[in-house]
Image 1 (cartoon, rainbow, N blue to C red):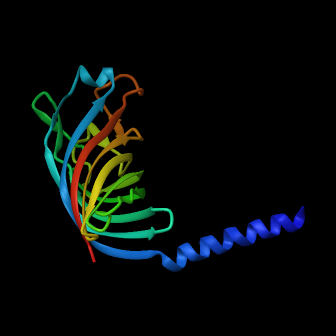
Image 2: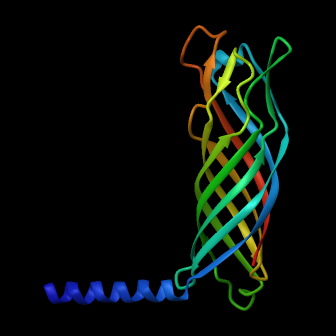
Image 3: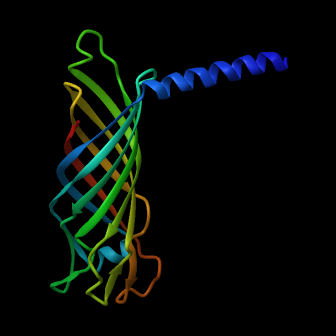
Length: 202
């Protein structure tokens, strides 16, 4: 029995080694647009009105692909502008607008017969960490420095260089740090957002 386990382990290591040997590591640039959708708990909805607007994102990305199984991992470093405001008595609450965003996705590309070198659709998912660059300027409403989301998206790769994708980020953590006008500490603010990007990989 032990010999069979050794053979199986040897085969797995060999296959994994072949995948690493044939793996493709690429880098490129990426840019796009986003639309925030702030979700407020009930106690905050009575005091604040949110105004969701379009923003943008731009930066660099890397992709690590194992051709044998069509599996990829990509990591990006993006400057992201999120134009969302909360208003209370004609005063803007401080959500932060400028972020360094780091998405890390696992991606699966579908190989298509005949046109696989021209068009390759894919699905992806993974966490995104956004670090706020703005300081809290409104004492009545403060937000946390780090915002975490989980992305789910689809995309298509064209001529093995251009990637166009759309995703939705589900806010994971409560980004509200302090709200002075609310009597309860159970208030929650989650930042969900749509993102459409185009990337060019060298």
